[in-house]
Length: 311
Image (cartoon, rainbow, N blue to C red; front, side):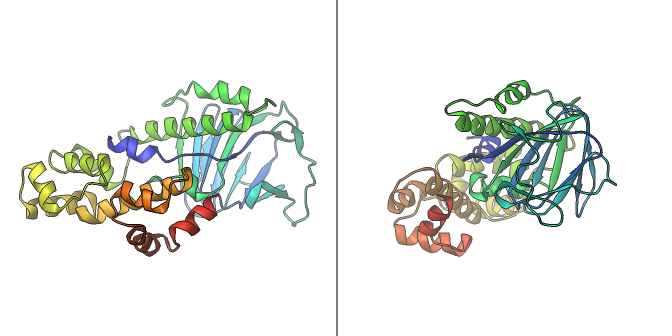
């Protein structure tokens, strides 16, 4: 498994909040939904993404933005427009004063705003729970990133635009998978930029010593690895590997392995019905108790609590 695959294999939307937003200027929407990740793709017109902290971002036709929660932000036609709607957790929509909008902006199947052929049209997809996105992926992203149409041309855009307004059996699953693919395509393009600043462990994949060791850990996390065994595989001393790995990745090999094992366990708790004991063995722990102890120390809840919340 290469480093990019390990990073991007996490997105698994479950009933994602997806809409086609259509507005005529002036318009502005305040987003306080605390979602872990939201993708905004401009089909027509332009939009500004205005975080409470950090740089403002202008989007034109074909441009895409990814906002990492839970911090709030405003989406508007211009930076000076006052919000006319407030988006809260669960997709609840209210007036800025807190009164319910009561569906007055609903325009049809997954379409919302002023009028269906508004001057600005955006496709918006939101992952509702952090468990749907790998923790390492979220940690690798800035609060707000964008790709302009001149550097990214995604064939998924017209397909998503067509599917989001379709009312057919199984449509929710189709949209979930399209959102996953859109996120993966966007982040692959973003990490490929010359000026990209991916996490240290991602950059370390190119190192002739640390890169192969990372692949060993990612490909076979259940193996009883030791620094000595990894150093032998890499053809260097234990001290040399520990020093170089820590310098390039930002943490020692065994610390990285623990984080990787627990991330895999978290995904399997969410995506499968495997017993905790079976998951423990699959990711390199000798018993359910050993996994539970390490899991709670890192995630703050037991594996069973994590599974229940994800469900």
